[in-house]
Image 1 (tube, chains in turn red, cyan):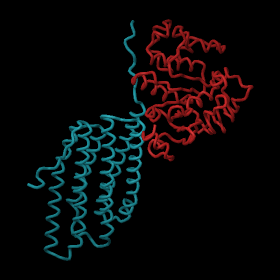
Image 2 (image 1 turned 180 degrees about the vertical axis):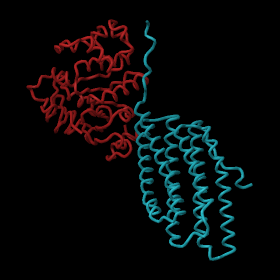
Image 3 (image 1 turned 180 degrees about the horizontal axis):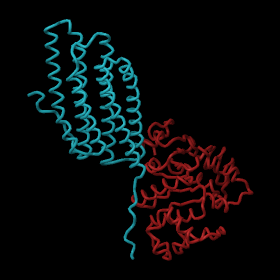
Image 4 (image 1 turned 90 degrees about the horizontal axis):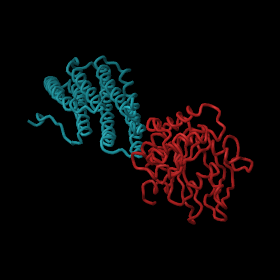
Length: 255
Length: 232
């Protein structure tokens, strides 16, 4: 199994406060990795570090290395904007642009100097996001007229339009109803054939359903600085986890 | 022309695929047990000790597969949160593979008896015992097929054949007891053959359990399908 992304002794700070401690994680290419753990343990902070989204938070700081495509992406020479084309992100609350469905998907490609046929790229992305059939006759409609579930799939199409290698998803289904959630989960499985996906979710059952690999994050003993206490094949994590803390968490003994 | 409707999307792809795989695994395991049963009786009839040894050795594969299926069921239950029909099927699979593994043990037992009898000739030619085996294996084949297909109608009808197996067993039993009474030197040989017949009779009984599981799976109904004549 090849690695898409590897962290080495990764520590993440907000000012003096250490939010994430000593993470050494290998994210496998073309697999779905879920990061689970109780609220406030640093899951989202960790996820955001993978495409330098923490940069936009004043005072945030990283120590250690994150290797992607042979480069340490924490290196000051790395262009975070170019990085975010290759490592895309989908957020908890669907956030389509206040533009047409077509424009939402086309915009990123255009901005990245895409020279090919834009219409084809838009269609391909919408098909990959399992949204094409529902919107093909109304591409010029405002994206905000779509249901939340459709908007989220539009955001996924938007990320796909710039042909990323990795897609990060931060609680992508929290705002959605159960049917929309299952649709996105099925979509994730089909995308995993091509892309590497990392999902942060507080919904354990979702992590169990959808991921290949699960990383269990937990706060340290002093209730600060979360770290990964166990990583493994999802089936193993949910049938016989190695660490008792993981067992307590997934069985709901401790939340 | 207006868009006539979306292509229906498949949902729970992973769960559906996992269950399909498990059904295939159950079919395969059923096949192994069928073969082991038929071969164990055939090798007894032909006094083929090599074949019997092979059957004993291959029982390990039956056991291994049973555990592999159990592991897979656990993983699906843990990760996919199946409910309703899916959950009933998965717990039924656990039951069915246990029954199949026991049936594999019966076949192994018959092979062991062939080795125990050894060089001594059989006290009588095998006629009814192979008939029992064929009937029982036919029942098994139909029952596992009905289980995988979720066919409650077939599952209800298979146990009727158990009466024939029981009748053959009674015939064999009576015949062997007559042998033992008329010539005590045949007690050893007759007892071995009794065990063989008993194993086949128990195998057919377990097939009925598989049919009960199938009906439970399809209807949610728990029932016992004993033949009423058992204690008539």
